[in-house]
Image (cartoon, rainbow, N blue to C red; front, top):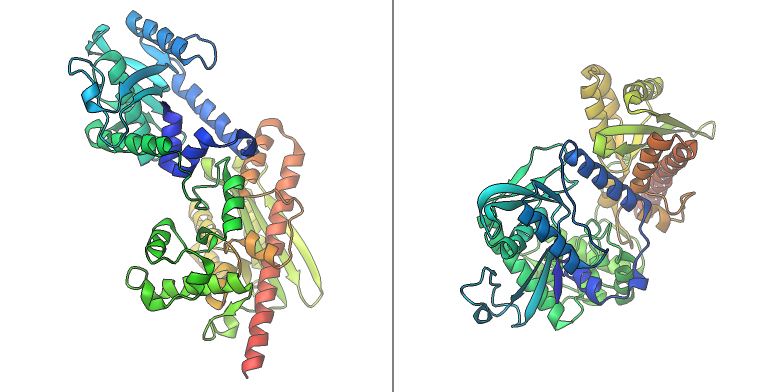
Length: 503
């Protein structure tokens, strides 16, 4: 069996992903998307920045021939090369402690793995020569892992420790340190004594999973599954099974508890007693989970038990503004402030895309936004989720906008997402704007467009100046504003009908 750092990383993020990486049908992988390509390009650029000014060597070998790569890397290490880029470390060990001779330099795995030979493959981004003892002489090597993230997440640290673990088998000594090179941060020293036990446990568990060859249960986690190329395959399976992970609010920990109560189907959860779920799951959350299952099972809207908010909390005004933002988080830039002006008396709608064609234009579009919303001082400003509110606060602080100018604008903001969750339970898989608006029949002009794709499009615009990228972003942003309008009008009509029926 071959265990690579990439496979271990898949396991750390999702057991099922690791299993499919080994046993799945490659034909069922999703195509590599544009945003994924952007991340690859960004990572390569980050590597180039790290390597700038360094004289490094890279082992030469035929692609996929790891044994040749390992031999070429060893030759560089024996030569005492200062910097080795993309070296190949290959080690073989037994998962049975008694099978390893005490005199060998090979580390021993834990008892969880079956007694058989394992090949470990590690390709750290950099191996840097350090003073020390090894089979090479009075020097050894330390692994450096380059990552796009800005935080030393645990999975990054475990993979870096894995590099150190395999390196120990190769050079005969465990490196004293291992490092993460993150973006816009100084190098982060990984605490190997602390992380090594976690790494070894993860390796043992991953090996046990792969040796058993039992496909793990599907679980759709929206954030974790977002960039996985097995997503469509897993989602189709989850939908066919009506898996509870498709129910909003069912997190992995909550699902584990529901499973302990044998509540693993829509029917069982919809018919559950709230008291069964307490105290592990808070009562309010338990009620909502049961309602959510009932709504999906019956494909019906369920109104809240009592009026969710006063009528003026969801105003209908002669002129209303619908606000949505597109951003490039990597450079902390909000480059499109889109506002749809709806004049209900004149029955007109006009969209204003305040677009920063270059990052330095952010201050300009901020002023344009302020001028527009100030022109309609009594118009409520509808948005979906709290990003728009936080962004207005950020921009006001960044560009030193007076408090007495910004506060009246913030007071006019109305979060439609919050109002929906207060008022109703919907038969949807997520309370994101796309899920709700599409359930209501609204469709985006580009069905494939999303926020991540807009990030890619804006990045491409900055690189190649193709206006089509900006046009695509503006269309998407306008559709988001119009989708918010559709959801708002539907909710107003639903509540008004409900109040009339109970009057």
